[in-house]
Length: 128
Image (cartoon, rainbow, N blue to C red; front, side):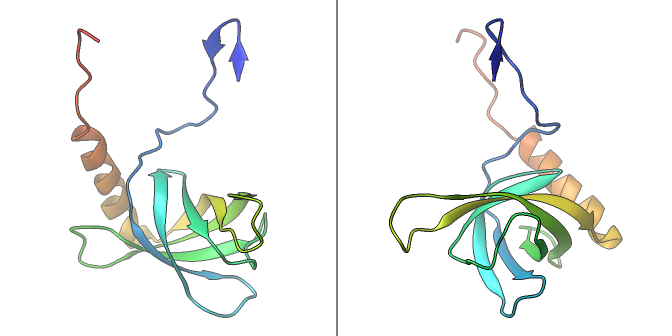
């Protein structure tokens, strides 16, 4: 959104384009699905899915495979948006999820992982 030639960012946290393997289940549906994140932040993530069971406001239970962690990070989230990537019948969806809960034992692991990524981002050139 542009107002007075200024870009207004509505997100509270930076989105990191980091692929993370995810297993998830959809509340009130059967089966375990697998995906890879397209981006992730402290309050949500985006991934691609073929699962038609995913609808806006549905609850998802996640298992995030964080590199360097001894155990997966377990979290729950709510689908806040879903967008088909093309007009083809069998095209996947981009799905945006807002975290509603991260297991207490996993919060520090998850936040440290995000901080490490941010800390190791390439520095922008001062000449650019």
